[in-house]
Image: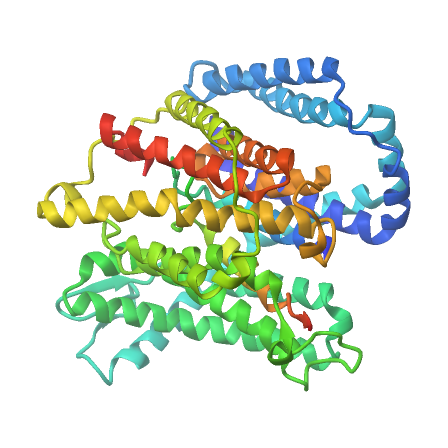
Length: 492
Length: 54
């Protein structure tokens, strides 16, 4: 376990980096040849490999149990890694024959050979860059001091980087230096400029990157200053809790969005060949399908930033989604929301799988009602629970199905996704939408992927998104009832 | 555009695993994780780039 504890995260990052680099460079270098070679694929499952995949997965699970329980020493490590690779390989071979995989890899040539060291170099650079954190933390400390001094009497200790007032103070750790945000902005900026290079005017578009990094660095200092002001005003639990956790992500999201908008909207950065249309004279069907979901996420992050240990403002997610759905009601009225018995039946099945997965992963977390909710006046408690359940059964299924099944599956087929019937799909679109849906459900990501596949199946079978919405709503309704009847509050 | 999707989703997936986000045990997405912030960014970017002429 010592090796996994020390290097596990970096090995995983190197793996993710290699996968991203290999796929991107392979598609860039040999995209046409790969698409031509993959046209003959039928993706009919080979059940022999499905069986061996299940066996390998079982071995991986058993070895994980022994390794993480410290029952066996590091001697099991090579077998654990081997079982993981076998499970992954057999899963791929179950759909794509091994000889076809080999042919596809041969088409990519030496792409793997320079993706591997590039990913390893990126990780080594990441480890080395940590030496910059402390010097930058000192700069952030100085900036926070400058921002706060005009407003409150400051107590600051440069030797420990502790700063605040006599009521509330923080220590600016190396991780709060703003360096990670700068790295994220650099990666996002370079990727964005490369992907949309035909729409940008170079070299002037490169200026957006240092502007973005500088903006993020300053906003990081402002975030810390705001945190101190919150704590000094008496909201120390909110400052140290939700605000501290998500304010950084809020600023990164805002700056990244600003970067993209500037690149396409400011004519000085835009190339003459750009085909991006101004929204003032254009319609945006993507917005119709994604805004309810984006609204829930934005409201959720805002609610969490204003929360201590309990998210009292959770209901604003419902209000945000309901408001957006109401604004676009004429557009949504054109969609077929009808459903049969099949949708709810699928939803009930997913509920069983969800509870089973939760039981399997029982991690000792408390099942009791959160203290803040239990101690609240009865009327307030009842209202919070009612809106929580109402959102789970109404706005959440509608918003998420519109985004993942209504938009993403069809968008993977055509840019004019509204013209794609709801019963059409590609295996890639189905896989991508289900994995994306699953990944956003925390430790129950695998059950989330299964749920995504099941809800998509409900929609594709009858060609109506109403089937997927009814399935999702049924699952959420049953989960809500399970929580309230059996006091399983960790599920919310 | 497929590459864009791939990148955004890989970014979301990678961030989820690399940062070991907090578990959410219901089919509703919790906003406390880095993956949710990345999903928010991805959705907003798709909306910004989703305009087309009438």
